[in-house]
Image 1: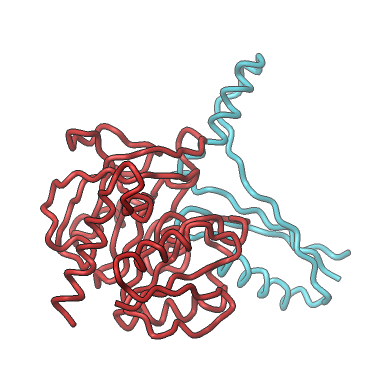
Image 2: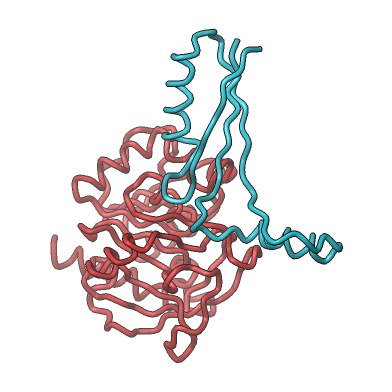
Length: 82
Length: 229
């Protein structure tokens, strides 16, 4: 079994209003060194396979076709054995 | 005119759209998302709502719904498609329209009347409407903040693809409800047969509601069909 740990992040050029609201709250709480917050998605997918190459290819296709929107997001991932 | 309104799990404006077209004398039917036959329409409506729960991203899962394949090939052959609110989000996810709808700048769900300005009358959806015409059309969304990169925005402008912009009651670009880039409320594809818009014209097109301005858009569509029938 392999597990893909996938991160989908907003491109730096895209405004992240949720991150901005969290920054404001953190600063209000007294975390005065905080200057910015970006909120991303973390997704885990399990594969019934131990073939690293095959699962990397599958993960790549999954990210491209569904998990990330190329207009606004980038992605990266790691595969780990379970 | 034959109108097919697609119902996805989570759609909630499908019956409103069907009602408006039926009331105007057209044959409007609901088509279930698991169907693959669009029922030979002149116009397809992708309605508002929260298809597939808006999970992952609005419209992202819907893109792989069985009927959407048919909608994409219908649009690619020149068929007319109108995506309203969630329908606009679905159209960007399928790639039929460029850009993406992001969360509103102020993080709030907005439900209110909104003025929009007709920016271009060269389309089946705006023909006969003068540029600068102000329409009062309700909005109801949390992810309506249209985003496109600067090159994409330039292309939209160069090709006259921006059909509607948010404005105030005088037509000034001074009332952007969601942070959309360049005040964009609705765009068409380059072939001009696919329109995506966040405001809900079907909620402003019956005599029982405050604004009737949505009728202007439906009348434009009818003019287009009358001229091309």
